[in-house]
Length: 216
Image (tube, rainbow, N blue to C red; front, top):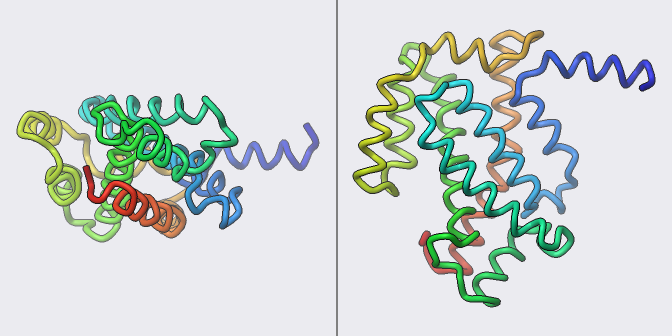
């Protein structure tokens, strides 16, 4: 490894997982990122990192996200060139085998991943804009406004218990920050990430509505 590359790698070691995700997404050209399966999976995997920082209390959500990521990855790996776009994956199930509305379809996985990413964006945004609120309050308000409307009573009850066990706000912020970063750096990383991922989310929701008709 050349000296310049080694220095860059050392610098990356001190970055937050959010900044690393922004760098990864920035590697995609605008036309590639529009409906990119890999960009979408990258955003989904970042959510796993955030949930890991919150701790085992979010294990129910983490398990669901992991299962949905694996389902989309399995389809992508069938033909990475063909399924490099989410649109092709959706097309396969809507027009090809007609499985889009099945419980284990990729369309449902994409939808739930999009909802979960929306949850993470709202959570990070509330952390920044509501400094007086505890993490428990922030998580509960975010969950109620994003995921709860789509959950049945069993899932809602499980999350209600989990929310009571989340760590302190300051602890989560420290865990999210990179080793060489401060809180202002983290806030900038969150803003950059939101600006990168929101267009992809909007395109994903629009795709599902246009091809399937509604949010399953």
